[in-house]
Structure formats: structure tokens, C-alpha cells
Image (cartoon, rainbow over all chains, first blue to last red):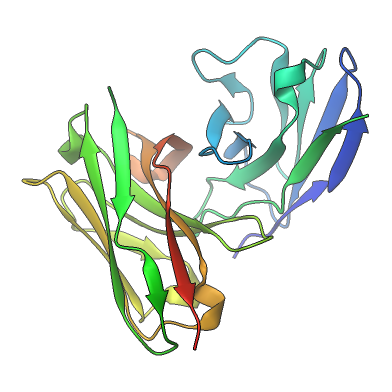
Length: 107
Length: 126
């Protein structure tokens, strides 16, 4: 199975900060990488698919990049509603494994 | 409104069985691959299984192969997960989700899960 590792596991930041979360795969997955946002008590929300394509309705401050084995999710200017846990997921091959998550907390 | 509603969770002893269901509404259920995803207490998300539109293909994470069976009833807009020989480590909130795949199928390009239910809790404990 393809293993996904996110870094950091947790991150403290302030409103207005630029934040980057990294996701690494144990083998090349081309651009088959998806990002989700998860808030307590809510279902996960798909933010980005195919490494860099934004889902409809997702603010443009979110962006994704990367290919092969290394990917990043960037939030250009943190807003209060962005504090959540973020997960990457590879869509290259079943089982579609997730990273362990990155908890983004308010500083 | 597009909606997925899970049911069937509960408390079961190790070795027992449980059948989860997911009722879909607001979209053409038979047009989509569907998945089950779980989250154990204090852990991250784990993709469990998915099934093709017509039920002819399905895939599982290794840890549930031979114990869980995913199925669907397109006439009833329902997704199911039959869980047998349950283990303590299967304790989790289980979510059904709608897959986003290329027109050639999920094996060609898998674009993630765009619609999720609110989850149903499964607790395996003696």
C-alpha cells in the first residue's frame, strides 16, 4: 500500500498568516492527490483534487501543488474558519490511503 | 439537496456482526462509485472500501478483506457494509461518501470524495 505522511502533525498560526502543509507519498503518485478539511463534529470537506484543482466554492486562498511524491497545501491568509484538521489522500491506487492529518490551531 | 444518511451502528462484542446502511438522496445514486471511510477514536481517516456503480467491482483495505462486504441496491438508493468477525480495532465512526472518478472509472483517476454523510458509530467491546 502507498503510505502518506503529512508534516507538520500540528501547527499554530495566527489569522492572516500564510501556512503550508506538506504531504509525502512512499512512491510516485503523479498528481493523484486530494486534500480535505475536517472540523469537529462535521464531515470532511474535499478542498482540492488532482493536486491543484479547487473544488467549487472553496476560497481562492487555498491552493495545492506538487507531483510525484511531494505535495503542498497552502493557505495564503488564514481566516478564523480555516482552523481545522487537514488530510491528504492519494488517489493513485486502492486502497486510497490518507495522511495522518495536520491540526491547524489558533496561536 | 444531495444527502447521505448512515444508520446501523451500535455496540457489538468482538467476533460479532453488524450491517451498516447509507441512504442516498438528491442525486442519481446509480451513477456514482461509493465508498466507506472510518475514523477510530483519536485517529485519522481511513478509507475502507468502495464499489462501482453497478456493483460489479469493489475494493477493500487489507485490514477488512474477508470480513467486510460492501454492496449496494440501486433500486433503493442504498449502500451497505456488512461487517463480520468484528475486532476491537474496528471501533470507529463510519462514513459513507460519494466518489469522484473519471469517466473511465476510479482506477483511471480518483478525484476524492465530494459528498459525505454524518457518520454512524460502531463500538466493538466486550
